[in-house]
Image (cartoon, rainbow over all chains, first blue to last red; front, side, top):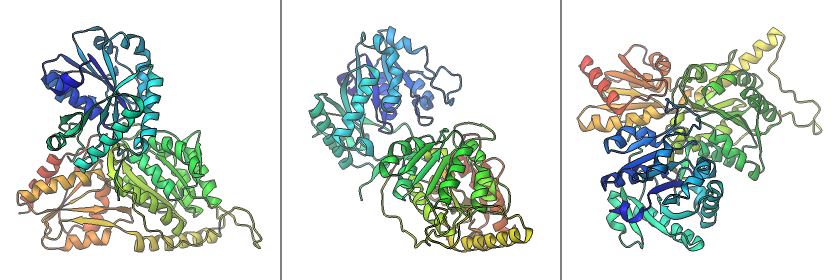
Length: 226
Length: 356
């Protein structure tokens, strides 16, 4: 439903400032695509974060029929920026819907640069995830600076903004609306459309007045006590 | 106050800047590299000095130099890197220099793993360096506490002219949490009239040293330090008790396991099991008297100590406080694997069965 309408491109590349919730969005997007009957591969290309990576949800993803591609190292905890050769399967097999979960900031997005010549030949979208509660991207100016930095590093053009504003367990509807305002300001300045607002299922029905779609999610990247 | 979403490590760095940290010296190591990264970007803008040193040894000795000149100095690392800093920490203690040291613990021994652990409790509380010395060890269990404690650590260090360690596990450094930048209470601090920062008309030179060659002189110095440590024990001990008023089983845990224990308590209490949590916030000074008092209560039947360490490091302090009054069961996971809510619940239940 959401996935087909809003992430209609074959490959979705999830980027943003670190800590904005890219992985939570990527995992939920992959699950939504799989639920819609698509053949999905999720690539965990996070070479920045040592914890809270989508590869930690391998069992959940595989149970949903999603193929997870992560570090080429046998040990998923290894602190090395090794990229999986299997990634090419997403780029070359046009029957596959790909979700690329990229590490934070321009430095994390650097992994994409070597695939840029291939990516621009494919039907793909570079998504910029925004969280208005992250101090370094809370203003339109700073959010756009990170966005442009990621574009410059990857050689790709951003085609959609995702408002993923939250405060972990303390999220309120007002927080999501604050993020919607920031996303609108970034959109107005850059001309890049807002793709959706991410909201835990409990908030989704209260946000139907927002001009863009609401993507209802359930939290998958939980902390050990949650 | 508006909340913001911060990653533990970047919040540590920002807290230090807000506390007036003048100098940061560090070397990257997972899972704390965001601390120097953030410092490199933001400390110079705040008028401070950031140096990425050539090693952890260099970093701690730069801290010694800066602290000796009266600067607020900090370094951060993770377990193997903190091991390298131990010599510098004993020198800081011996020379009575204030400094803040962050240890964002990972699995060991040796290089271990980059995943979170608590295997450095002994090192932090017993002194990994040589000689008779103590460091105040603050152990936050969420990002908000970490932010508050880092700011306070600078004041504690200055008050006693002693290194202070903020000991968190890798998870606290790596996780995102909402925090607010509320004001942290500032202490009335003595002037740094001991600092070696120019003679400035004094009739004597200030000398920073940990060497006291004459035995009598070194003995006096140790007596002076010991008296200072007694003051710290009297004034700085902190802990939290959750649902201990009627608890039959008390979990002892700090940092992330204490956080996990709170979820276990919810489930246990919902099932009618009277469980509580005793959480040391300062690991040194350890809240020995408070735990001793709790152990004397008739309603307390047993303790369950939970740590991200398999050798039972805090368990030693728990035993010393409980003094055999009640049985103590132990749950330890190390090497980057965390104890789970279910494991805690099971152990509390089996401990209860044994004593009932």
